Length: 139
Ligand code: ZN
Image 1 (spheres, protein in one colour):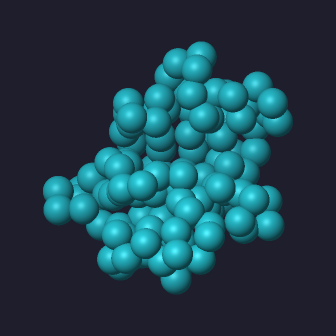
Image 2: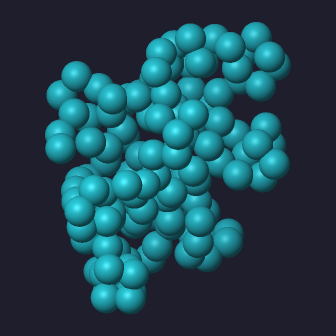
């Protein structure tokens, strides 16, 4: 599977952006509130081809997975997301292998995509996100 993006938990997207823009030369390619995950996100990519994206995640509520990640560990790498075709098949395969995804079914994620997460205990300590392009995906 190809890496789609790397998620980084931040206290403030606005405070984090200048480093990625000015020092790494990335541009914001997409911004969105993702109420189902209680975050707002900014996706950053290479100005020409996008490439593998960086997703900055800022909690919008004091509860939620990203908010508790920040409370427990502070800002930092939160997950790696892989492009997935056939999300339902991937979820079934994981379940059959005794490493069930955290979600029984794909759920709505940013950019109109379907997502599901796999617990870090199955992936050497890293939270894994599977991403499948949804129907109403935005550029
Ligand atoms: Zn993500």
